[in-house]
Length: 188
Ligand SMILES: [Zn+2]
Figure 1 (tube, rainbow, N blue to C red):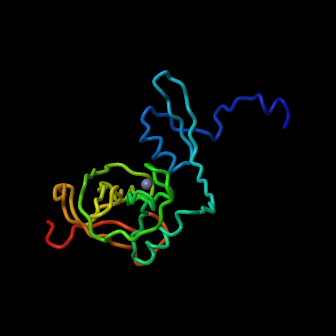
Figure 2 (cartoon, rainbow, N blue to C red; figure 1 turned 90 degrees about the vertical axis):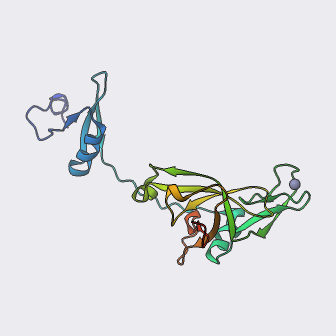
Figure 3 (spheres, protein in one colour; figure 1 turned 90 degrees about the horizontal axis):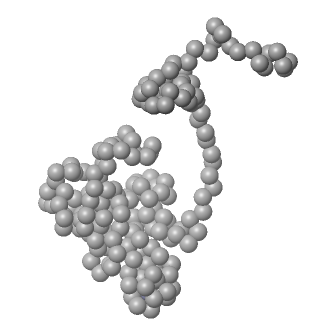
């Protein structure tokens, strides 16, 4: 490339990018044309490009492995401290109170709503399902609570103490979304 080519500004060239102050229009344009310019409040032009980025990530669950294998078997596994017996719905290898080692235990497949929230925005995996409900589940005999999805009910039907049952994906993907909760029969 010669210096002349590099320095020459494009005038009347092919690059006629849409300029907008609305980010929603940037997103629309990216889908159609692959590039757009967002003009911010200071008048600065920011070039955006559509740049799909794929990574095959070899993720190790390491010491959490039994939890995810359990989901594939329809089991919900927590851990219990071998010293003080504190029982974790979200597994921990070591007790956060006494530091003792914790072993795997099966949690009940029934619980109740401790608290919940409705998400009107989510990460890419959940965007199509918004709004969706997240729940903190209490289990009898378990000292901590578990964050999960709550399906098969609307936001208006949920209440603190609502009995829940765990549901498992028939084809496990070994992800946390392999488990979710639904109202127990007669709960709503
Ligand atoms: Zn302990």
